[in-house]
Image (cartoon, rainbow, N blue to C red; front, side):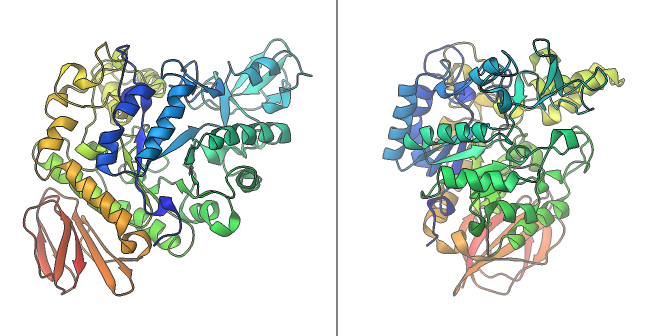
Length: 541
């Protein structure tokens, strides 16, 4: 069996604002999550990653934290949080907290104090600069709102750094006092019994802004090692960092046990399979399956014997998996949703499911920018209009990657507001909720939910899925096929990413079906024709 609990568990990401509202204010909350724990236990997941529930003015939906040790009243109370941790653990589910330590809200007490004067006790918690020739110190820009990443502070006549919005002020990790304050805060949550942290843009904490080095700074790994030793070092604790800059080799640096840093990181190489590398976010092209599998396989190979992989198709910042990599409508929606699940959950690493993925929830395109909540998407829209795009063309591009796609409310049933809230939801429910919802999928034989349930159970119980060796198979471009082997046990996963049949040659072996998305399957492999979006996981005899 695997060494750590998170090597045999599947993690389920909850976007609390959109999961379940318990009090009718249109905003999901902690009591709402508690009310759905039995559903999550039925699914079989071993951990819940909560997007931020801390005190926040919500300039970026909670990723701008004003108090790390308080719960946003929109979501409930600290007592609710403690109850969630306890009740989840009673169901063998751990809570993983989203942690944003690259920046805080400008309303955080640390920054409020820092602005009182250059000799304030928390001044060096943030990045400050004198003007250079009467202007910003350099030309760094803000990722969310455009314009300069430097904001002038009139009290001190200095500039402070914000690489995201002006209300998300970058922390200065070069300050030992700041680092210790963060570790103390992390230990506060560890003492409450959580099972892990997901760490937002963790590759940015070692930034050298005056050298314009924003990721992978020279002391990044020193800071992570120090963090490990000061907090969870002696616990079986999940730590996963978000690192858009990382490839497979960098993933090994973060997750190699000998380095004592993180359990794993999210790396995003496979998500360039439908985008122009180095291009703008909205510059897309049809999915390139060869590019997709090359990126997935590189991670499997680089971390084959050391380190650990994270496995995911989507999250709160990305389009819905079935809309991006499969087909979101018609009978192929369920086929492609199951295909994606089987493909991913057979790989070595820890799988992550984003809420609603387990029933094939889809993107929710809108027609007017006024319908968009995502601050980043609004900025992109303004930029596209200035560049000359019509409103219609700009909206088409925004819809491809608006983070609202993932944030529409969870679709529980066919009642008003999909059973999410008795009040007006903070973000409109996807109109397809009357057919795509939890209640429907739980009553449907051979559902997407059941496929995820089967895969999660196999991950829990079968060592070959946890630690078995990976081997890619030679197959046509639109097919992903590989084996996992541990001792005398070999399992094979094969998936057709296309809407047309395709012929493949697989090992000439008798196969015992484990999971599949068609009712029938070949019990003798060899030359096989895969049907549209067909996928199966079999044990080779």
